[in-house]
Image (cartoon, rainbow, N blue to C red; front, side):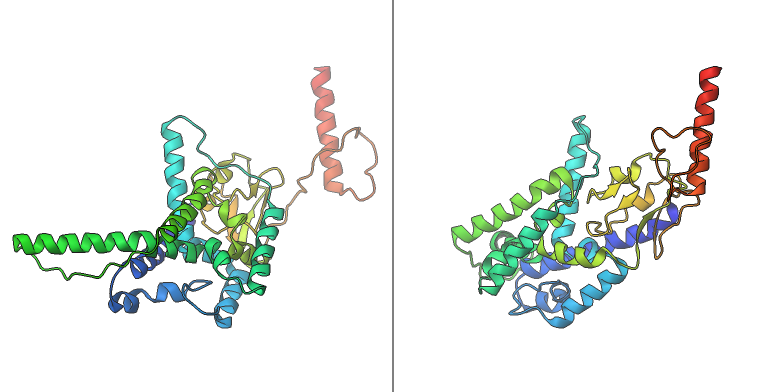
Length: 328
C-alpha cells in the first residue's frame, strides 16, 4: 500500500544514518569523530563503553516500545541494520541461484530466548560483564569495528598519506594505529560472522532467539499501543506479507502477527495488494467470525452452545451448497 511507503522509507533512512554514524564513530581517529557522531552511541540501549546503563535510557526505550513497538530494533540498533543488509544479500543470492528466497512463518523459539536472557542475568549478577557484551548487538558491532576495521582504516590513511607525500598531490595526517591481540581480533570477527549466518538464511532470527535486548523489548512490544494488524475481512491469504517478513512472525493460518517478535520493518505494509494489513492503534473486529466449519454439522441442526448465530448461518449455507452440488 502506497500510503505506508513514506513510513517504511523513513525507517530505512533513520537506520542507515544511525548505523553509518555509529560506524564512523568507532572507525575514525581523533576527538572530532566522537563529537560529531557520539549521539549514535548514546542512543543505544546499552551504550558502548558505559560503566552502567542509565535508567533514563532504559525507561525511554521501554516507553517508546510500549507505544510504537520495537522501533529500536529496526531503526537505531546498528547490528539490526547490518542483519538487514546481510539478509538482503542472502535473498538476492538465493534468487539468482533459483533457490527459495522468501521468508516463511516460524514458531517462536521461546525457550531459546528465555534461556539466553536468563544466562545474561546470571552472569551480570555474578559480576561477569564481558560475556554478555559479546552477544549484545551494539557492543558486538563496536567490538568488530574497533578490533578489525579501525586498524585497517588507519593503515589505509597512512598509505594515502605516504602516497600524497611521494606525489606531492595532497596532504593527509598520519595516525597512530593500535592493533589489539590476535585473540581479540579473531573473537570479534568470529562473533560477528556467527551472528550474520542466521541473518543470511532467515533474516532477524538472531534478534528473536539470542539477543537479550530483543527479548526484553519483546516483553513490552507484545502489548504495544501501535501494532501490525491484519484485516481478515480483506485478507485473501496471498502470502506476500509473510514472504517479506524478516522476523518470520506473520501467521496467516490464524491471521496474527506476533508483536513480541515483530521488529517494525514495515515491509509487509507495502506489499499487500488488498489493503488488508495496517499499522494502527486498534485491532480490527471481524464482521463475521473467521472460524472453521465444525465437522459433522448438518443442515437444520441447532447451533451448539457458545456458537455465534453468524457462524451457524454460515455453516448452514455451506451444507446447503454441498447438498446442491451432490444432487446436480
